[in-house]
Length: 426
Image (cartoon, rainbow, N blue to C red; front, top):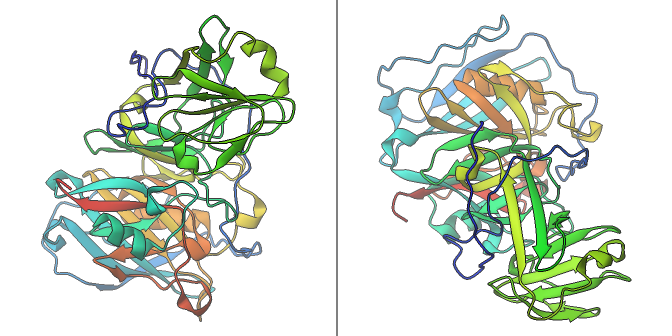
């Protein structure tokens, strides 16, 4: 974590496979900004019980097993009763599915598991947007079909009104959304060689027009508030109106300003719009049409190797231990208690594990964050993160929904993004 990658990549929307909104440069500085977690879409039960001891039992496995050395993990004096999946169960894509039961006093909770042997390299994990557009929405089944995915799970928290992701979002090496200056919630990342990472990347974003001083960027593709400097790209999908008393600078794919305006303009397909609040106009006095703007982003290694990432998740497991902390993750009380839960994790054998625990059904309410963390440990995960839950929790395998969705009438909730498994080479 002590080395840094230095590059000088200018903004390019047309070549998303290589383009980055920022270049990597220097060590970041901590910020004191915070972000309020969004609701999971429903009011969750805040009076749920948290038993000290829980038992997990196997309901059924959909595939046959073959002996394999199991991962042994010490867990705070808790003995797991949920067996680790063995290699003989994998299908032609290196994927295995299981159905289990998490036993608790309030009712046995159905648990659905997809396990992927990343060592086989038969599928590539990928973060995708619904309809490939920020702020768009679609069911997980639709998203999987649109991308030709073998399997998928719902992604990060999102704003129920705008359907924009909450937290950091990177796709194909480009920062699609970044609502914080330097601080990020626990983030799930996929590297250029399809390795999976879970952690809290530290980064700093800066902007400097030619002849001007550096300024901090407060966000990417989100609504501005007073005192903000925000960048909007085509993924935002809307016209941008200049902040009251402020200015907007439209720039092309090379970062050159093409127009300065105070009204409302459409975002160009290549390049973007820089919106500057009144409080910072003095920093852009010499910025006019023809001025080139340099954008930089600092990421601490190894996150400089990530191509896809989404944040806003809650850290559940680290090194085989439950590490969920409500205060540290800034989780609102309305998100606590029993509910349907989604989580993803990684095992010591380099297996990606995607889990959905059902909730709000007859005879069971769901699980809390500590319990979904225990489930991930029982699945052999050394590290795990919670994703959006509640009505969003959905797990799909070969066009089949594995879990029981909790929305009224059993209808899939439309979500903003997802983690999918694409056939290798796709």
